Image (cartoon, rainbow, N blue to C red; front, side, top):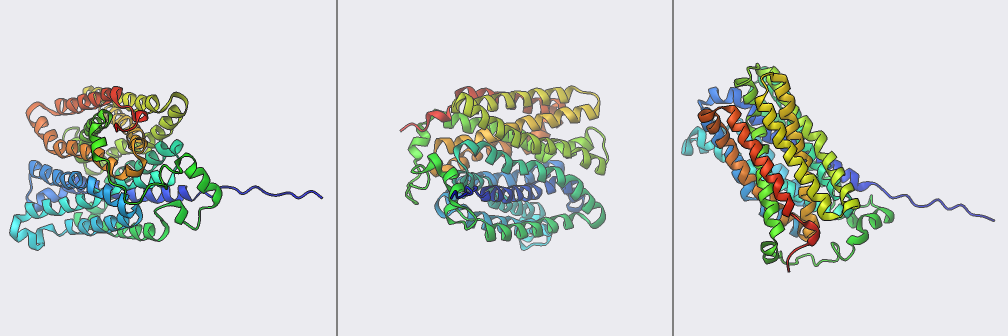
Length: 434
C-alpha cells in the first residue's frame, strides 16, 4: 500500500513582516515630506522666509543624523519590534506638535522659529531608529540571497510615501488648512505602530506563523552566523574603523543623502517657484521622483541579489552602486538643461529613481559586513547620509540664490557621480579587517 505524503510547504511570514516594514517606511516619509508641501501656507502664516524654512528642514535631518547609531544599537540590543514601535509613536506625537509649534510653551522661550526647529529635531530623533531597524529585521528574517530585495522593497516605501504626500497634503491644505495634514499623518503613524507591535517578532523562531521549512530556508547558512551570536556581543568598533570599505561606503552614502534631500526638501518648491506650476499642479508633478524611487528601489534590490549570485558579492554590490549613482548624476544634469518643463521633470525623476536603485546594495552591504551588528553599522552609514542631508536643505537654496537653480542642481549631480565612483573601492565580500 502506497502512502502519499504531501511535502510541507514553507510559510511566507517573512514577506508579511516585510509588508509591515514597508508600511512604516511609507509613514516615515509622509511625516518627513509633508512639511515641504505645507511650507507653502506655513511660511506666510508663521512669518518665515525660505532661508528660515531651510533651517527647519535641516533641524529634522540633524536630529535624524545624530541618533542613527543609537537607534541601530538599540535595535541590535533590544530587538527591532519594541524599538520600532516606540520610535513610530514618538515621531507621530511630535508630528502632531508641528501643527501647534507656534503655541507651545517652547515658542515663548525660543520664538516661533525656535519652537518649530525643536519639534522637527525631535521628529528626526524618532525617525532615526527606522531604517537601521529595518536592516536589523532583514538581517534576522531574510537569507543572504534576499537581503538586497528585502531592503529594496522596504525602503521602496520611501517612494510610495513621498509620492502620495504632495497631492494628499496639498488637497488637505487647500480644504482644511495646513495644520490638519500633520494631525492626519500623526494618527496614521500611531495605528501602524500598534499593528507592528501586535504582529511582528524580533526573530522568526519566535513567530507562531513561521514553520520549520521557512525557518530552515531563512537560517540556512546564517545558522551560527546570526542566531548563534551571544545576544550582547560587544560592537566591533575597532574593526569598523580599520576597514577601508566601510569608510568609502559611508562617504558614498553621504553623497546619496545630499542628493536625496534636494528632492525631499526643495523639489516641490522648485517646480512652483522656478518652473511656474501652481500649487496643485506642482504637487502632482512633484510625485514623479518619488514614484521613480518606489519602482527603482525594489528593482535595484532584485538586481544586486541576482548579480551577487552570478558575479560574487563584491561585483554584485559594486555594479549596482556605481551604475546607479552615475546614471543619477547624468539624468539630473540633463534635466537642469531642458527648457521644456515636463521633460525636465521626467529626467529629474529618473535621477531620483537611479539614485534609489542603489539603496538595496548599500544596506545589504552593511549586513554582509557584520550580520550580528547590522543595525549599528547601518546606523553609521545612514549617519553619513544625513550629514549630507543636513547640509543639502540649506546649501541648495543658497546656491540657487547665488548662481541659479541650474548650478545648484548641477552640483547635486556632481555629488551623485562622485559617490558612485567610490564603489570601485567598496568590497563587502572581503568582510571586516580584524
